[in-house]
Image (cartoon, rainbow, N blue to C red):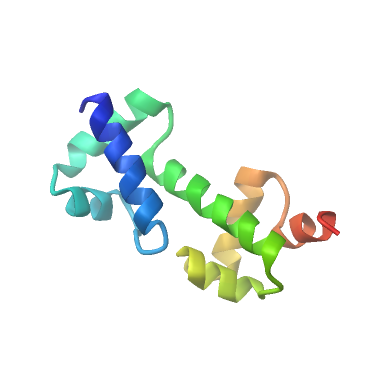
Length: 107
């Protein structure tokens, strides 16, 4: 995969972050081979497609935590997480604090 395809993956995720469940979904949208994406994206970026997807989702979660008073279940649904528990686990791992603590620190 060339660097152009890596940028295409990033674009596909940016446009579909709340509907994509895994690398297979990205490959399907791009109409390309799953194994190729799975192997090449980390070589180009240093992270897996799944990690990149969660990073993008967490950026949107931060946005919603800053700009709305939505409950976590609504933010989870809007950003493509299974539920608020899944959002919380991923957010904690990536951001280093729970979504509630993140929101409270904004006040």
